Length: 147
Image 1 (spheres, rainbow, N blue to C red):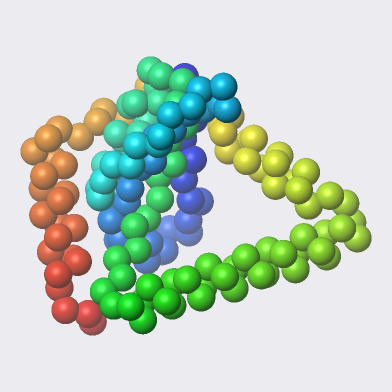
Image 2 (cartoon, rainbow, N blue to C red; image 1 turned 135 degrees about the vertical axis):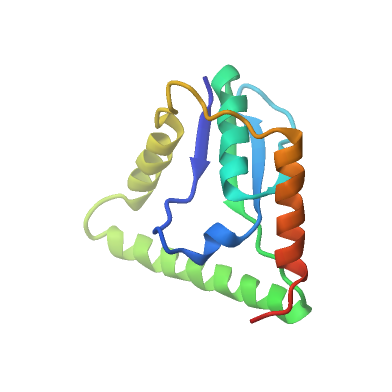
């Protein structure tokens, strides 16, 4: 059995409506191959597909939202946000040194996420028709005028 990692989001998160991708890769460092990225999918479809694949194989699946950027400014904005988050994390790391080793905490959280038990039975993966319907819904959302 493999591991599935995804974001823990509040129920009202706007990220649920974004397209989602799945990155499949080796579960441990002994196995070396290039990760496979699949999608975009609706979140429920991505989770069901990932669960079905990792239930039978020793793989890591990362399910995450795909942020559609429609301009250079949008891409730069996402990069700036990521940089600010990294700076904030660096500041937290420095502050954590007063109270313990922040890296140990992060390692423990990653290990816990990787070993979090999947459901005994993975969700039934969506059919090709269901996936194609999802692709159409994603395309409609991505091509709609901004609100």
